[in-house]
Length: 331
Ligand code: AHG
Ligand code: MN
Ligand code: MN
Image 1 (cartoon, rainbow, N blue to C red):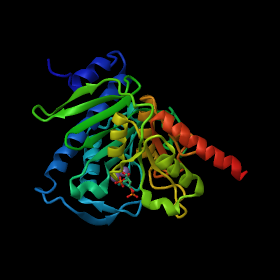
Image 2: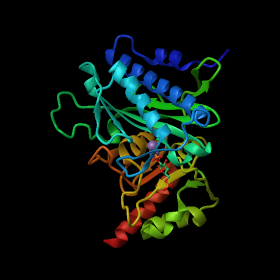
Image 3: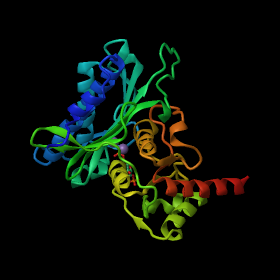
């Protein structure tokens, strides 16, 4: 008996009597389709002449790769065509873009990082696409209605382009579930319907070269992870989504702290930190900026960045304790 396909799985969790439930299912299927289209292009990048940069920079001042652009357009095209969500916020678009085609769409905001791990695109190392689906308050006329915290997420996940392509998501109607792309039929198949992140692990993932630029609390945290625990191992791919996926399976913690030059760090709340934080929490893990849950932070702008710590609950708890001790000592 072959494994359940994503379409079969989605059908089984969709409430037939609810328009809302149908809409969420259709949105998730569209994101999975985007994942398949991007996965195909990732594999062809050297053959299709899509290596390298476009020559432009994005809102974060980073060089845009041709594949970043392609992946962004895949999402825009698909959602412009079907009009299922009201608004899109993407790492690669300076401002939110309206694509909704009916009243129900206006209740949904889709945020995404079309390609996470851009520096790994041209070197054949795992990259992915991250998404968050937020429910917006009805009839809200507030200008900042799009600025929702991770606690308003109703679905989130990622597609991972590695040796195989995975699709991992959580929604109001499911646990965290994992699929793998069966290339022979072009469909994702279920590998785990209730992923749980191990409670403890020796693995920590951080860019250690930033050590001199961290504050003393963060330095103490990383010193502790390196030498203060029974066992310790560093694993850092440089693609948040890849490091996160490995840590989901093996346990571990991903950290991208702020630095003296950039106190809020690099990770974007609405389409990187919050969706992955929510996945980790729904899988039994924890997520913090050091002092508060990543799910409680209300973004000040669509591209808000925040210090990010996500992973196995025991390790994150220990990290929180070190930060809080330093905070109390400062008072
Ligand atoms: P993106 O490619 O979407 O810009 O995100 C890259 C992020 C994240 O994926 C990764 O962990 C981190 O940047 C790497 O940054 P450093 O090179 O500073 O470690
Ligand atoms: Mn990213
Ligand atoms: Mn990106």
